[in-house]
Amino acid sequence: MPIHEMLGSYRSEVRAYASSTVHQDPEIYANEAASMKSDGWTAYKIHPPTDPALDIECCRQIREAVGDDHTLMLDSTWASDYPSAVRVGRAIQSMNYYWYEDPLADDDIYNYTKLRQQLHIPLMATEYSPGGFTAYAPWLTAQATDYLRGDVAVKGGITALMKTAHLAEAFHMNYEVHHGGNSLNNVANMHAIMAMKNCEFFEVLLPSGAQKYGLAEEIDIDSNGNVHAFTGPGLGAEIDFDLIKNNKVAIADIRDTGSYQEGNIPDSINLTDQNIEEFMETADRSEHLLVYCYHGNNSMGAAEYFANNGFTSVFSLDGGYAEYSQQDSR
Picture 1 (cartoon, rainbow, N blue to C red):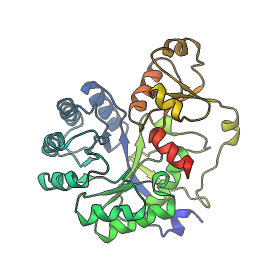
Picture 2 (picture 1 turned 30 degrees about the vertical axis):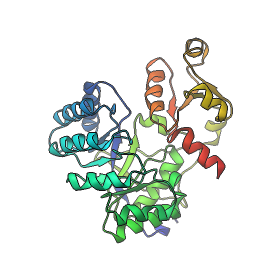
Picture 3 (picture 1 turned 90 degrees about the vertical axis):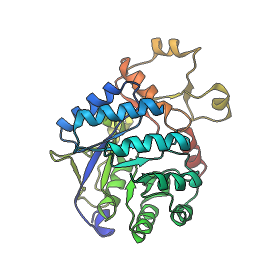
Picture 4 (picture 1 turned 135 degrees about the vertical axis):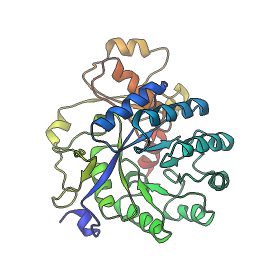
């Protein structure tokens, strides 16, 4: 029996949205969003440059490119202070954006509460809020967010994810599931989503190929922009062990040297201004490359840089070394 049926299936398919990497040029976002729409995607989320004026311009050009009816979201990745968040939030709500995600630091409940009072666009927080299940309580009691957030990787697995989704449901709130960062986590996310009444979307982080690895059959959208539940027993996903065995991965740490020396992922290379040129000259660009930083933000841009310079398979570590070290300690 599939896991989603064990959880009490609510549906067998759900809308997917394409979730951008970080660009510096509004036109790149606009062209990408328009292209995704023409390919059948019905929703697009922006990870912006995190400069308020530039972010607003990016959002404006994207809206113009896809039309008034296309679903758009903005994820500012905790980069704003309160005044900037008000400014950006008011701008995108006038453009009919669907939600405003993580504008402030993930522990800034005080300013989230103030921000929610200033805006009518739904706010989304708690993706990386410190603590476990009970950490949601202050967000709920302060009425600091409209949607709750999580995924199997950062919230402790399928059971913990379903508990938090049901908590949100008890308050008539959506619980939108964050991308899993890899194929198998995304399959687990999808099973959970199929059993949630209060989740509207399945997130696909771009470039989508960077999040797919090791399965004989990957999750793909259909012509209507939906993804479908796996029907096999358990997760229903067949792992391609031969593929995994026969492929090597180079790991690039782009943090400062001091942070690297304090702790790093085993076998990683600390890339700095002093050795990046040598790395670009000697690296096997057909080999998989995993890039990580502190929290997974800068590594997305670095991964794009490597991909644009001939590396054929580049990955950005979701959550960065901070998330890796937490899971490693557990």
